[in-house]
Image (cartoon, rainbow, N blue to C red; front, side, top):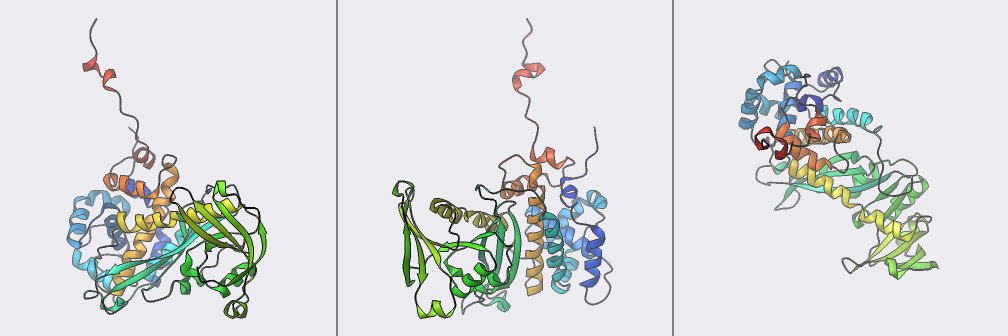
Length: 383
């Protein structure tokens, strides 16, 4: 029988150890670490994310149980007090920069979205990660709530979050959205929370297309109308020009308005875009496919442990979130060994049960079919 490292070991292969150690030296504070290293911290926290461990004691016990398998990873079990102290004190920027390095490798992965056009397709969205105000007072959002905000630009072709930012909960979504520089020729779908005329003008100048929802109180003039197709749900397809003083002052360009009626939900939507070549039905389909970013947030919050935090400081929370993002990236990278149609969310559930199995990732994700009972010797009848 051929030897295989654990599934966990294979999943971590894209993490180059010497790059990690260089980053660890750059992002270190205080005295030299003695009882454990940043690599031990990373292995322990990544294992916790993948296996659903909910407490420091649980992590320590699991690492102790897998001590002999950690050896091949160059890691060792870490005491819960040491792990808590490192999460509290050692800069989370190490993992933010590690995520960036991994992202440069993953960007080259082959991938294709569901549409015929060749333009890269992204979904832009932000999600609040709720925290307890009494436990995390530094994250106060209002008088009675606390949270941090995760902003993501998800590539639909690879399901990779190519643009990621963490911010305080009270910060407007537009602040981080403006900082993401999408490649020229790409198409970005986002909701009405990113409605900003000046940003629309800048995206158009940069050669970036967008698809969003039109606000009901928008003031505009129809400059040209095209034939509609109610059978396919297209009630209107128009070129428009925003005519309010606010819009004119910010130089918003001529845009396109598509009114679409969904026969499944019996709801009517008004879409806004600066792409004039794609069919109206494709414009509606692009916005509908924005659901991919919602699935991403679901995978992050439900399959990775960022609902219950292992520390209360800002640094501990940021450490846990960035390691969760790294784990998602590693699973997405391994996704191409899975069956066609598998989602990262489904892979996370399978890996949770097979993390320390000595099987190839291909075997974990594509188990051989079970032999039918009719072929088993005890089920055969002698004639």
